[in-house]
Length: 288
Length: 324
Image (tube, rainbow over all chains, first blue to last red; front, side, top):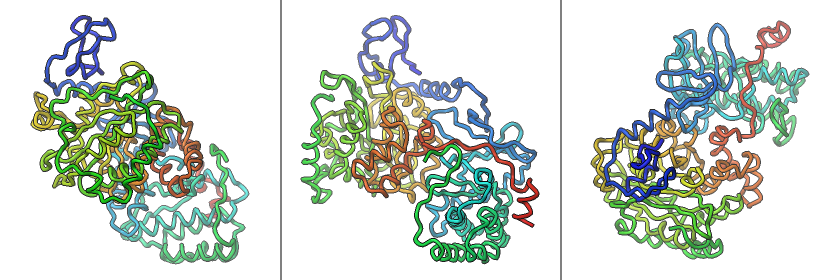
């Protein structure tokens, strides 16, 4: 938006017309600069124009911020999940989760904020693997958690199961297990038990072998870390039913500490498969 | 400004000749150089010329407080020719560079320094090394980045936008918060302009966006913990968290190339950086840094998030295997 107008034709002039003699692109008039006065209202008008710019498609508002919905990811009695883009420039891609249960939303918010400010060792890297809150506010009568979108974390382990109905190569189960156990270890050291480690709550990034946990609303501050590992072990065992015996033993009777789980799994994987090597995980939408 | 031709060899020779000099020998200013004082500047102009008919304005507003002074130092000793070489390799024609230095208007003697848009290595280097690395900074976790935003919004004139509707690129480096408003007193004291009142920083950003694409580069993840959220509220996915300040030039070059459509995706970026001899770990770090921005352009080479699949728990057979 240009707030300086040509005195000859009224056409918009670039902002620097305040300081420089400028040729109007509309009528060709040479407009001499008029001084060094700056109006705050001009800048505020630019902000209003930016925030209210028309966009095509479905727009939802969380408090004063508007988001353009790119995709509806899930709808159910407990929550609606949207992939969206902030309307105000510059863009920010986010995941919007609208909770029907406000208490659940508050639990998830508390857990994610605690992880974000955790000073446990490795926090600068590991806190980024959990959803990062951008905003919390009212949206369509529900409490919405706005978290940053992480590119490529496009599939849950439910999608992986559908794409590989015959089971996964156990080496994939190992890297997925490693990444999730690292995050759980960090969460547990930060005093947080996820409480719902299920296939639909583990998101994977196939290209870089990343994995993250979503749905932190069942978090327990007084829970037993072993419960999370029991969930993880069951997932991995079901994902890769033909894994070597040492891995099966770990997954079916996991230890109570994520760090131990990680160490034992790495040792068993090295014994079974040798040094770790990159292995492509085919999933819909990813090229080779 | 912005006349003359760029010679990569001459630029490399200039920077490598000083690679072992102490910082105070490279940056000799002990006060703001008179030609970089911002007061009274009407506009810094990036204009097309016979040798650069398609100029592209690129500005680096470098935080020169405390440890952030490492980035201008890296640029002056080694990295700036790399940036220019990448621009050429990526097919970005006629970049013209402007350097600004950012300090703190409440406590520093030189809170803002401004060079000129330049197209030759010698002149870019002149403005960069003419910068005073004052090294002070604000006491409360804030620096006067908003002054750089204000200057770029109010006092620049760029042909790429005026003639081709092509916005320029502004890269701010930093590790602190901006002040929430551009203070009227600073507008007058630093620039000599008369403002009727303080201006919210977010409103200045909105004005800036008319002609510029602003990015805030945070040098590493540790420092991101302090300032990232505040900057994301202002600049969204234009906040770039690097893993090492040494990646600054590769990251900035990647952003320009992606933004200008010179690279189709981050996959292509990765292969081009490898061809240029960048090590695998640095390629990975650059890719991770620019991926959120690339995703806004649909250039992250990744599928969008998939609608939720049926839960395993809804299938009795698998449920039994999982939890039976």
